[in-house]
Amino acid sequence: MQKPGAAAWGSVLTHDGGTVKALQGVEGHVEWVEEPSPALDVGQVRIKVAAAGLNRADLLQRAGLYPPPPGVTSVLGLECSGVIDEVGPGTSWQVGDRVCALLAGGAMAEEVVVDARHVLPVPEGLSLHEAAAIPEVYATAWLNLFQLAGLKPGEKVLLHAGASGVGSAGIQLCKAFGSPVWVSVGSTERLAYCVELGAQGGVVRSDSLESLNDFAPFDVILDPVGANYAALNVKLLGLDGRWVLIGLMGGREAQLDLAQVLGKRIQLLGSTLRSRDEQFKADLLSDLGQHVWPLFTEGRLKPQLARTFPIKDAEAAFAELATNQVSGKIVLVIDESLV
Image 1 (tube, rainbow, N blue to C red):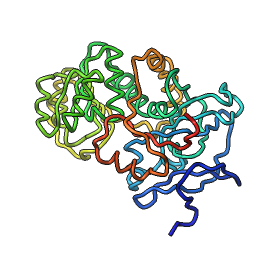
Image 2 (image 1 turned 180 degrees about the vertical axis):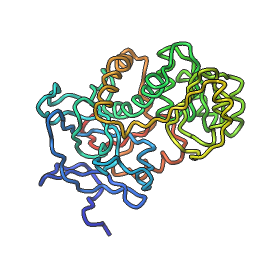
Image 3 (image 1 turned 60 degrees about the vertical axis):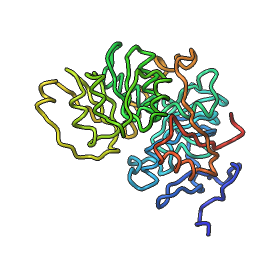
């Protein structure tokens, strides 16, 4: 039986009565439900959503393990693409502009209202589906590798989960800015995918992570795994190495040889993006627009869109990402009329 407030799966309908349809995580599954249409304020824009990127954070939120920050909608989704439908005072965007946006939540909906500073134009030559796969992963990779870790040309990088959305973005960014990069991945197919994107090489984790010593020492390690790789990370880092921790897929508690941390002057940087304040994200998106966005137009960066799912098949999309076999990004198509 359909739960109260739940809308039938199907094509996007014109909403009335001040509501829109949006994707909620409910008791470990997803539902396309009616939500109040978000109000537009000064400095904000309303986007008619074409598509939304699916991220591991969405899996965690659906499972009840990663609640949105205080004051943020419980609607799923951290990034979307679409067309500007309405502009608030104090913004430079125009109705009809094709854009993509970074959000703390709410992207998987018919429409979103977002700080205009967290919006970037769809790079020339890209579809709206491709653009939906850009904001979260490129913002994450740029923030952690280049802003926090201060990556410099020629420095060596190790990306754990290198074939993930963030890993795919990180490989391309490292290549574009002159830093050789290696990866750890889950299969030989995914290793080949990473090498094709620009990685120097890497290891399949089921074979031997210790083989990463053949490529060490590294200057920067981007790590979404945590505890299971902690001791190895310390061993692999060189002098003044930076270990940027962005996830805990492998656990939260680890035993470390602090003598190595001290002797190598290793910096451990814990980093999250979703909970950052509005100004921080505005500055980050401005930096992306200046340094990263032109590389899409030049063809030096390319969204790695693994697969799209219509919103009615959202449950299947979540299941696909949960297999840990996706190379690149999965995108949910909200409005098929927008491309």
